[in-house]
Image 1 (spheres, rainbow, N blue to C red):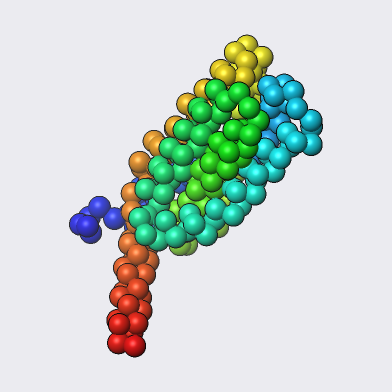
Image 2: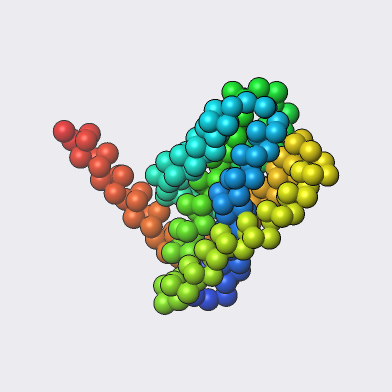
Amino acid sequence: MPIMTLTEPDKGWAWIILVASFVEHCIAGFSLYSIGLFHIIFLDRFREDITLTSWISAIFLCLLSLTGPLASYCIGRWGCRVTMIMGSLLLTTSVIITAFVQHIALAFLFFGVFAGIGVGFLYTTGYIVIAFNFEKKRNIATGIAVAGCGIGPFVLSPIYQMIHHEYGYNGFFLLFGGLSLNACVVGAVLRPSRLEVSSRIARTKKEHWIKLVVNVI
């Protein structure tokens, strides 16, 4: 990879990446902190017991949190850009399929499991990419990026509530899928930084030595 394509910490393109991370946090924050809105929509859709329906949200939040180690591994292996796009595509696909499911069990699978994993990829990448692109100003950059978690649901929740009122269950999730797809655009601007590439090189060297020792043994 040419050195000229790498982003230097705290300079130039790093601030574009900060904006991208902020947008990603808006999308992920809406998914996480508007979970009550999703719960009401699922209740209206499936007409099931409130406790059973709440498991959709519970599975979603559980998988979102548990995905952190897997997302971190993917970042170490393929970088922040690929991991962000993977999460966006998984979330978008899962949400669009959720728009057409007829049984609550499928909502458990596609929204609870797959969408939860997708948002987990976005969340983890959004944090780590800041650490890779900022050193001296990492604290303020992290604060700005994470602010998206509050601004996202504050702005998007009432908008999507109106969307549900106007277009119903299917329209709500189709448009949410369109919103989720924007994270692909966000991921595309996550140019590798010098710190990220150095981390991946160090990881590769470590794996090489481990394999060498194992082969000797």
